[in-house]
Length: 392
Image (tube, rainbow, N blue to C red; front, side, top):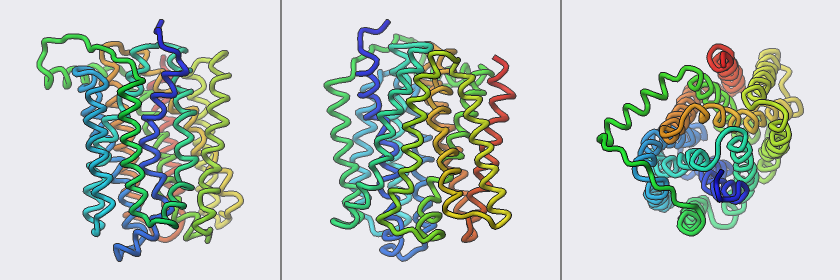
């Protein structure tokens, strides 16, 4: 049993995990303004969201095994420095192509920081205790996307879109202070094997664990279904349904409120049910909601009032999917927890980024590409769960 309080650890790690949703959601209200400044279409700037998550995938792929080898804190310090410098550079960029490049660099730093969080939970807790800590981290983290669009809208109106990235740089400084003074140091196990061999061997062991890979793939695809909406949220609500930019955070925030409620429900459910079983039910609900959105789109019956609650279900299920999937696959690993977390994060964000990029390429000015891809990824997530993970 760890000497650190589960709640204290969850709050500290939640503040680090919040770096990801802050980096994505804070600038969503500014996408149309940035498009005007760069002289491109909104969808061209939306691609920077996908480039960010692809960079996060790379950062987690590298950061996971590196944190097993060098320790959690050193890897996070380097990641936050990269994130800080890239954020300041974005604030002065004048080209959408440079924005793409800097968002990838920023994301590599952010990904290397975020990946230590689940591995840090495994350093201190296992089983249901780990599930409860991860759920509490989710609660702390969810405050970021709830507040981020409103923060971004205020900064956009008062100081311009560039101030949003200065804000992100400042948050990185706060994260460094949290790491330095609050997070316990865990000394990594000594391994004489060369680092490059250790990395490939660790990932090989993770990939060969079939049941764990079922949980990882289900988590990655379930997250992708939610991320597709995040990528296209500005188009859907502002352009398609005509919502004012100042009201956008309200509609976007409905999803976060749903996730907060389901996050608290998950804590209660974990007292009676296995996390893997809760995950299965959440994937079914997400799939049915995504299919309903697709049917409404195809029949021309899609409206703001039926879209909002169904999106709340698709995105909100992330509060049940992510912590239960992570706790389920981490139970299969001890010394390779960093590599397992890194592979999960890499696949999660790589798939989401590639699917989001594909959404931008096939966008036709209607919600059909979004709802079609959401339904397809939700179905794939459910298939991975039943085909691989459920066998446990």
